[in-house]
Length: 406
Image (cartoon, rainbow, N blue to C red; front, top):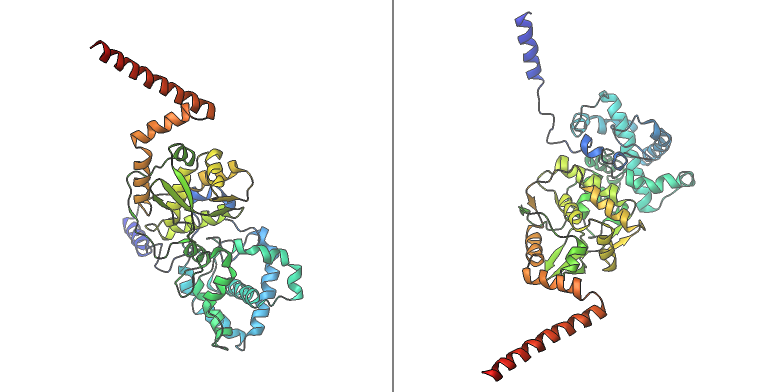
C-alpha cells in the first residue's frame, strides 16, 4: 500500500467535508423512517414542482400544461426572455443550497426546471387572484383545481424568494399598486388561513406558509414537560371533566381551566393527514426546537385512543368528521405522530400539569367510581340513594337505642 497516496486521498476527503446543510437549506427529502409510515402523504399525485420529483413518470402529463402556463407568463413580460433566464441563473448556486440533498442536475438543467416551475406557479396564482381563466383552462380544470395539495408538500417546493423575484421582475415592476406575491399566495391558500394573517411575515416556501397559518401569534413559550401523558377524552369525561369549543381561530390554542378543556373546532377531512404530516416533516428537518405542530399532534394522540374518544369530541362540537367513520378519525390521529421525534419542551406544559392534577384528584376519582358503578341509570341511582338512606336511618336508630339504654 502506498501510504503517500492514502494520505492524499484522505486529505481530499477532508477538503470535501463541508457541512451538508447550509443556512439557505429549507427544502428537504422527508426522512426515510417518517416517510415509510405513509409514503403517499409526501408524494405529489398530479404535478411535480422543483427537482426532487421532476423525473417521476406518473407526473409527466402535467409538463405540457406547465409549459403552456410558462409561455403565457412570458407573454405578460415586457422583459426579454433572456432577462428571466438570467434572473434564475444568477441565483443558481443559492437555489442549489436550498435543497438538503445533492442534486444530480447540472446548472443548466436546474435553471430550466426552476424557471418553468416557478413561472407556472406565479401564473396560476395570478389567474386565481384576478379570475383570468381561459378556455384552455377548462381542459385541465380538474387538475388545476386539485394541485393546491401538491403545492403544499415539503418535497414539492421551490424557494419562495425565486417566486417573488420573477413576479416582481415581470409584473410588480410594471405597476407598483399590484399586491405583493405573498398577498397572492395568502389569497390562493386562504382556506387554510383561519387566523386571517396579513403580510408581511417571512416564509421559505408554501409548506412553511401552511405551518405559519396554523401557529399561534404570538407563539407561546415551550417549557420543559416531564410528564406528557393526559387522559383520553372518554376517561376525562368519566372523571367529571368537561369539553368546550374554544372560539379561537388557531387550532393550536387549547386551554384548561376549572375542569373544562377548551379545544378549537377542527374539520377532519381527506386532506388533514397530508397537511399535518408535511408540517411535522418540516419541523423535524428545519424547526427542530420549535415543534408546535408536533406538540398539538402528540396531545391529540393522547386525547384520542379509540372511536369512543372521537365520539366525545364530535358530540361536543369540537370535531366535524368529514371522514364519516369516527374509527377512521381515531386511527388518523394515532398514526400522525409515528416516527416523529419529540424534544423535552411543549407549549402545553401547564395545561398537561393542571389537567392531570384535576384528573388524579382522589375524591373526584371516588365520586367518578360511584357515578359509574351505582348511578349510571335512573333506577340504579334511586336504588343507591335508597340504600344510603337505609344505612343512615339504621345508624341513627342504633345511636338512639344506645342513648336510650344509657
